[in-house]
Image (cartoon, rainbow, N blue to C red; front, side, top):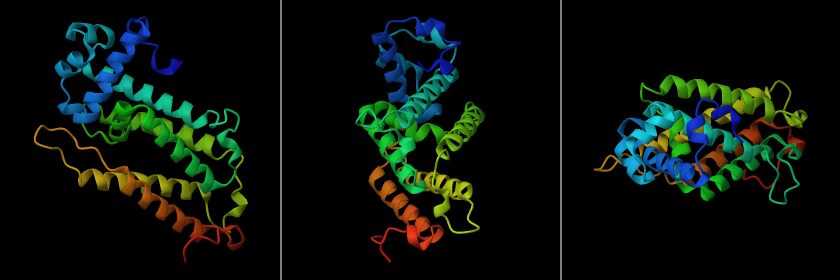
Amino acid sequence: MFCEVIDIYDRFENLNEVKKQAIMNAGFKIFGEYGYSKASIDDIVREAGISKGSLFYYFGSKKNFFLYLYEYAAALMKQTVNGPGEDLRTNIMKKTDFFDRLDEIKKRKMKLSSLYPHMSGFIKKAPFETSGDVYKDIQMINQRLASEQTDNFFENLDLYKFKEGIDPYMVFQLLSWCAEGIVNHYQREAPADGDDVQKEIDYDPVLSLYDRYSAMLRKCFYKEEYLDKNIDE
């Protein structure tokens, strides 16, 4: 599982699952709370119940550990989005409406966040990490993931619902930028506390605002006959 993120970490992968999960959960928790720059390796190994030497033996550096966790979380997110639905049969690709498929992806990501609380805080913040040590790596990973996401997303969609002259790929990019901008806005509104812990964003207003933008864009870009008549005027 997740072979793309484990090739160079055989020492870690050969550990038993309980120890591996303890180490990853510790990383998710500390990086998620403090961000990359202010996260302490001492805090991580204390949380994981291992020595500092062991962590460096498995990963070589703080940077490698952070990027491993990011790749792992991204792979798990991809598996969750592309996997079967709650009935274990309905695949997301059966959602052929552009906005319905986006909504289903959002719901699945939020469900994953509730199942993995420490990873949730990590994956909500890590894509926007600005530390010079990992910034370029994160941006490269984000670009690759965005390309894969776009290719998969557009398969078998009812693109005829868009008005003439509307490029669905640009709408997709617009909504991606919109989501990123909303998260950035609320992150600025939730500064770190006195212990440098980055306060968790309240994602209810984030999702509410995103839904309003999505509904507005549906109304602007869809042909009249494909609009939900229940959308507020």
